[in-house]
Image 1 (cartoon, rainbow, N blue to C red):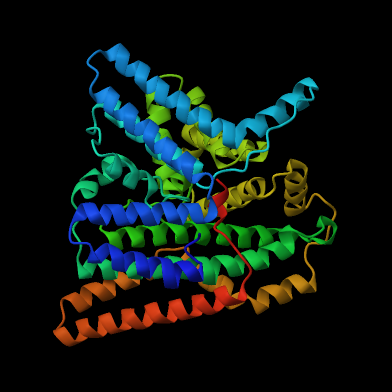
Image 2 (cartoon, helix red, strand yellow):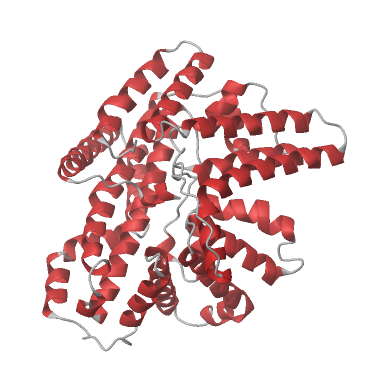
Length: 472
């Protein structure tokens, strides 16, 4: 099930909210949330919901054992057991075919690659449960004694299948006690609708336009067309994934949970280092806290640690060498920036920094989009004018002209302009009389209804279009 689905919007979510708010006690609310969350997951994965429950059971038991074990070596052994089981399951279901095919190619072998279907969201919930076990081992959180409460943490449908990666310690208090209010519920609805609009109105439209360039024969592609195509994909993936994160955060507010931000306008960055502080923040912070720093961070073997993190970042995104190269590509950029490039960037005009970053990101998205490396490299050659194709054609200019308003609005919404304007308006209204404040609530209601209506109309006219990060 996806958030941008009519059944979810007009049946699943309203019914879940009604049952949740009707329950007089929080434990009963927890039961409602767990039941609806498991149903949400089973809607698309009727078999692999058992794997989700198994993963939750494994780390619930390991957390309890770690906390009740006195000797340090025994704690380490239990933690190792959790790591082996979780990463083993992830490797089997997500990477076994990739590893087998790679071995066959390198050593000219003929092993049959396993053909498991990838359980939706396994990369996300595996990292969530692993972070819990590690935090219990470090003494940063107490082990959860209630299996129902722990299963609630693992299965929450708000962020279950595409993040953000929520750590147990960040919502431990809210698992025990949640504060519900009309103001917070309204905040959640507004954030959810903004995310829905990002996905359905902007991301899906950009995706349809991008495929005209990205999925055609490269012999018919121009240099301008290749840049336009990957720019549209950059718009699509940002609004698709940040839209999902907005919807997850909004749903959290509706049910009394607070999830950390996952995006902070990454395309306004001036370096790859800054970009990855703003893009998929929960993943970057996970690798920093659970891989990079434990390996030594900046203290020792910094280059090796960075290479490892970016290799794993690429591999996390998909079982294919293009994702590994995409991760290493950013690893190389960030190493170069830390070694000398940032000092140069600090001395040159800001707009040149932005041009460098956007160019680097767009080239990176080519590696991300094409799982066939030969296709990706051929597309890059076209972008760089090395394929002997035309600079542009009249159809490129016509397509830009006919979609100019959409492109302009999408680019504006990639920047924090609208956020700053909204915050200024809110501040002025909050210091004004009652009537302007009431007018603000009316305008919010009109905005929510308008975006919901437009999104609903577009969903009715579109084919099935899941969130991009569902495949990870």
